[in-house]
Image (cartoon, rainbow, N blue to C red; front, side):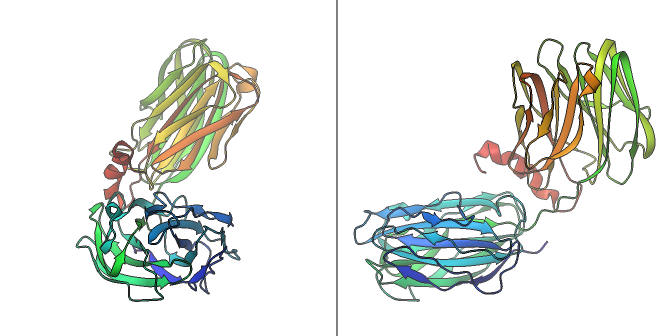
Length: 444
């Protein structure tokens, strides 16, 4: 897997009012543009965001706001689509120093970083800068280091000696100070982190004493997610003790996931081509509204029958959805469930996942009205049971640290929802165990 790369920077832009730092020439769709802005520790906001949002752990600052010396650094980002318009920074008060940086070969969905960290060097006014490190769950990250300065001079020699033994090919990419207002600026550098784990704090030498704000951003390469949807089939039966329907499976590193909804009885078993599926989770929203999710590793290829069997007569709705490229030893992680016994129109559940994973959910209700998958998810079956009192639907969404699977119902009633993250079989999965720990470690 290749590291993301620094593409280029736009013109340094300064002012005592609003500024609009430009993009460098030659940007492409899916490039990640990052705007760095320094102020005299005064609030930095965008008056015309143009799709840019602030990076996690931004801003960082030190010194008394509006006084000399003081420093605040803020970073905003956007994944470019082509024909983008540069954002405008609102007047912070004394001054603004800004520059646009563009990176290529980053993640093309979600946040482009695996982790960020920020700090202000303990509020010290000295000549040593410290850019915090972090615990990164991704491999082959380009770690971007940003250190602000309150130094009042037009200079490109304020920063030198960037040092971090955990980062290879550490190189400075900008060194910008200006006398606008009370003056200030920032320096930036990049280094490569090939493996998962912690990269320590980076030190940098400043030519002149300064208050500082600093951030590190571990830019992540595109996902190696190998999981692909194979096929989905839904079926239903009214007042029956079993439901049988055909489903065709193909491909390699296969996983079959079956969701079942009922309004009365208890599930006995689910089989596919003979073998019995393994339970993932179940929900009970009371009043007979029960939901089940089960899975089968390496299901037989070709057209075979899914057989859903209940203890007693029941109204049954079921969806079978198969996938390729799934880890055959640990196909799924710990499931998450949620229920509404009082009834609502918004089923949802938060699933712990990882960048290379694929999250699948199954929602179950009484089948009254309609249910619509929310933005960001891909529907993988939606059967209202032909009025038999049992509704069931499934969807998938690309993994991240946390993924919210949600639906919108036209009628408020009881529901249950199950979500779980599927693990890919592709190379590059060495970081997945660490990724699953990130929410527990408080890292997004």
